[in-house]
Image (cartoon, rainbow over the protein chains, first blue to last red):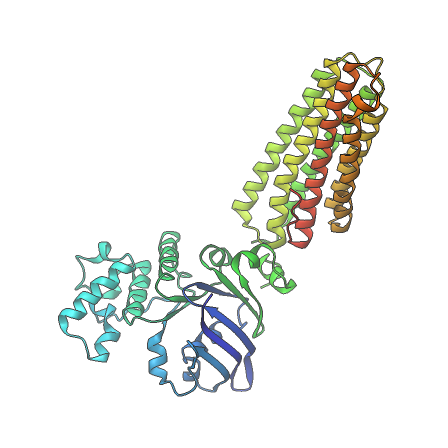
Length: 251
Length: 210
């Protein structure tokens, strides 16, 4: 397994409150890593540290290293460059309501200002196809992104993240607000995405983590308690806290 | 995922009922063997049929539990182990029935059956102890049961070699003892399968016994 992200002694704070404590983990390349744990355990803080979004919150502080292909994202790398390489999809779909479906996909690329109109159009179509949305929206490309269903909006947001050609995609409970059919489409998409990119997904649904991930990280009170292959975590976890969490004894 | 573990209790209650069936039939088979009784085939068959129905019930409940509760970790292992145990107990019952069948096939009045009878006693005790290890979640005891299988295998081979060691025995007796010992040896194997499942249930690690 090739390591894509090497997290070393990562600590994070919100003012005085420490949200992450000495997290060390190697995230493998082109695999899906699920991050699970009870509310407030540091899952979201962890992934926000991976694309330098944590530091945007007032009172936030980070220490330690996050190496992306060996380069420390907290070193000389431009935070904007980090966020281009490490895309993010949020819990609630957030398409730009004043933009069309097609424009939503290439919104980030437009900001770069390096693509011609025809290229943007082609990239928009290609990314809509890669998230399985093309057939559903090909006749409505000019309509507002907000006119789509919740599940379609979320796939539109994933297409928007993919358009930037990221090396890592972070997903913060991407299907928690979706119905079972839309959730299934997102899960299929996540499994497909790992052929192209590295995926880290937060989920409160342990069954979902078991279904779609190759590796699973369990966090509790800001600490990484256990990190292992998903099959091991869900069949024979080594740590009693993991066992108790995934069997529903707490959390 | 659930904190309602009532379903595991219900599955275990059914496993215990299966073992009760085996205990009752086992006593009948042991008595028949010691006293060389014949004509019990239909009685034994009824036990075999009833344990198969119980096995179906356990399977149904286990599958239902997986669908409804989606268990993980030790809860998941408990459900998958119960499925395998129900099969093993059903096989144990079938082997007991096979002993009765074999008794009916041969004229055994003049045969010395002390060895196979003792072998059956020990194999039944292995099943009993493996179930005890299961209900007590005792991996150590389960490992001891697996070790004790070597002795069963050795005694089985000894009985098989009767045609050499006791050449004056009737062919019918040699055949009966050999066939019955083979059935009992297989029965004891299922006690070991149960024990290996207990080890997996408790430790999460698979033994290579099966």
